[in-house]
Length: 216
Length: 243
Image (tube, chains in turn yellow, brown):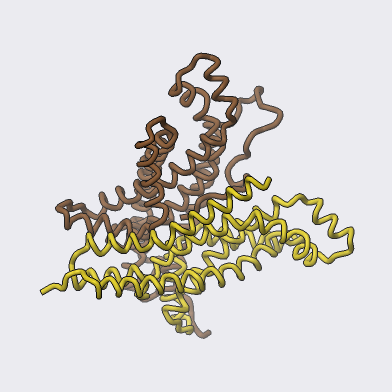
């Protein structure tokens, strides 16, 4: 006989939600670090370097995350690099996030007037120092609201980890549904749990955006 | 690394992948048209005078935008039959995608409507136009023009998101890739080729949307405004809403 959906089943989902949050945090850290590197290449003085960054961003944004995930999880082991689910998910999602974050941040960097670069150069700062000391602090205030907004996308994208069998929230939902066979309730509760994680981020992003608009 | 790439087994089954690509493209086309219409309606409703209607649209948009598409799809395909509403995979997929894209489009088109300067409404009122006429004759076209790049990015993301339909057995490109993988055991090659198809489709979408933009919004020759207006998609930096 089927078990019914009760407190223990809810706790299984809640445990999955923790893994969803964990993947999100790792993705944001990894994607952020890689994204910053891509951003630096994207605004580099050398044209071929910029093109390299553009090519990377276009290739990642033009292919589905599911494709990256499968290529890494099922493809890499065949090439002689066995990879765990956790690493595959972290790697694929970080790569995916880096392309989008680099592009969001490029918009912010380019919103800072180019005279600021020149002013930095006039002070004798190196290109990297101009970026770090002059451009970055100004770009940051512009970049933060859409970056928080993108965190919502990261959280939602973690659901794809379930497809390669990583036991985060969506995968737990499938497992719980397999024992209770109450799909309406199980998937409904799952959606609500995602909402509880995402909606505060959405609210936060919007509040930051409003504060910035007021400051202008 | 002593792996030799062998694309031949994959290329010999390329027709299966192409069959999947055709499904991906027609599903995307149908969903983009319907989802855009839902978004247009949603945006107009969110600026209507009825508070209840505005509230309903807000709930719809927030519910969809703050939950993963996979969860929405599973809820619709596996959850609703428990209430007696049994859907086949393809109709369920189409409904889920239209609902999803409709919410994102609502938000984008609404932002466009809000971006049209206030003076345009006042001018319309001064001409004695009704609210509906102001919206239809004055506001809508510039609004859509402003957000067209963001809409185009959203549509491309939608096309890529159809890969998730493989999880309920819709025979689109990613599902077919899984089938080819299971007979060739050439996972890397299969998914590399598959990603190539998606990339080509995404680039084709970009060209198509640039063309649509020119046809729908570009000023006619000779009456070109000196200040231009928003640039064609791909050129204008957008903070599009990612999937």
